[in-house]
Amino acid sequence: MQIETLTLGPIQANCYIVTDEKTKDAVVIDCGEYTQELEEKLSDKSLKYVLLTHGHYDHILGVYDLKEAHPEAQIVIHKEEAYKLTDDLPSFAHEMMPGVQKYVPADITVEEGDKITFGETEITVIHTPGHSKGGVCYFVEDERTIFTGDTLFCLTVGRMDFFDSSEDEMLESITRLYNMPGDYEIYPGHNRATTMEYEKRRNRYMRRFK
Image (tube, rainbow, N blue to C red; front, side, top):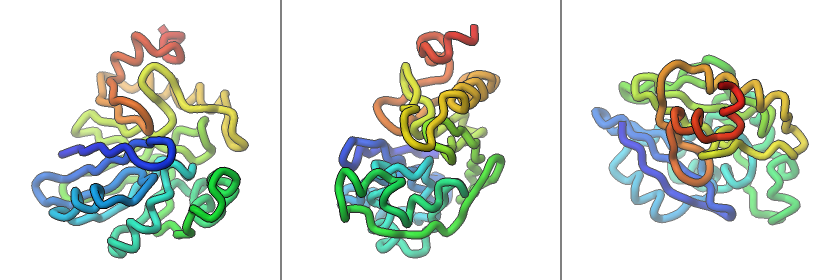
């Protein structure tokens, strides 16, 4: 599995291109902006899915144009976040940048435990509300890798002051991640990659569980 990281959009969210190296099938995880660089990196790949960790504008503003360029790719989002792809207000784009978000419906809605397969790579959906009601992490068990969106960051967690945020749900989600056995590579929605072991030792939200 190959992972390429682009930092895109109005507040620099991470966009990941994950490629099954045997088949060149690929997924994009979050797309805050559609750029020439992103398209160039996809030129030798077959894009199967656009996986969204949640529906906030900084993670979805490029999805419409990416779908236009790759109509065969299916847009995937948790069932409780899907309306944010076709509604300005919940994505916060309307208030901050009116007219920027282009409507694009989900092709597939997922929930806890669902599987997404591309090539020989399988991704499992982990429902991790807290930052948003339908926030998810995408877990690649064979690669010991988790794409955590705005749930878990290096040394902190996602904001909990939005209309569908919940501190109690965030604590439950972080507890779930903490209790996953072993170490994992963590690819968050913003800032640098980290590891689960590092976060257990240094992240103040996780250290409380020791």
